[in-house]
Image 1 (cartoon, rainbow, N blue to C red):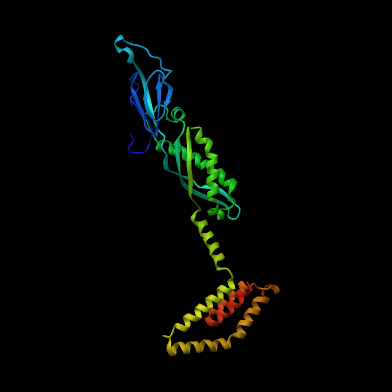
Image 2 (image 1 turned 60 degrees about the horizontal axis):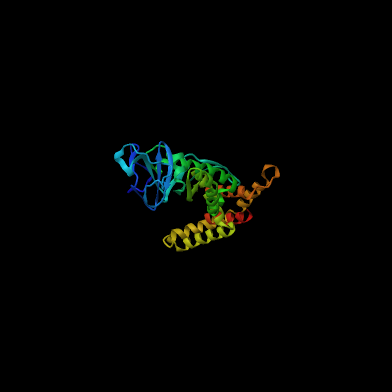
Length: 318
């Protein structure tokens, strides 16, 4: 009996062979196999059920009588390995070191990934002889790290072959899972195991790269810059209309701003003309004009409203 759910193989007895009489009964549960060893050799595998040990069951063990007193039920010395064949689920895997990945859009990036997988023992004799050896107690934790290294190795190859950019990752998880499971089948089968399932829970980028991706998606979310600027201007006008606490001071300030606005158009035009004709006749870009416009605002040569209006015109040209 295994109350922990972690035991894959348990030897009976713990300290070596024991005497088993012919005619003894062996009980194997539905989720188990029992493998008999004698003189260091695996003799037979018993599946679920109750077995009466006779020469017919274990033909490789011939009866011998060590003393006349034993009679028909002479003992033989053997070891029995009980193998748990239930599903060992929710085993963890993850990258201890980042995977270097050549991305078609982000160039070289380092990826981290983690997930879960489940295994079952399919060939009890092969699993004992190739993995367990002479250990009296073997749990899934003893093999988890080894299987994890196999998964990471195959995942690295799959990502390089199947994925072009991490921007397409969410839609590729299912395909990557299927391909990864197919590539792992032979490695697990060679250990007497089957990979029941494997899941990629996440493939993540370094924080600095993730920030760049977020900025890029934010720019895409803005869509039409002209419409976005119109929206911002409309919102600012609405906020100004709601601000009724300014009283006469606000009106005076607005008047002064308007007066300054009437006085400054020629200054702005001259500034723009200078930006256009400067540098040996080269035409300044709208971004350069925006910078000069911001300098005029900082000098309080123009009002915020005039700045926003001119900024809108320049943004339309970008």
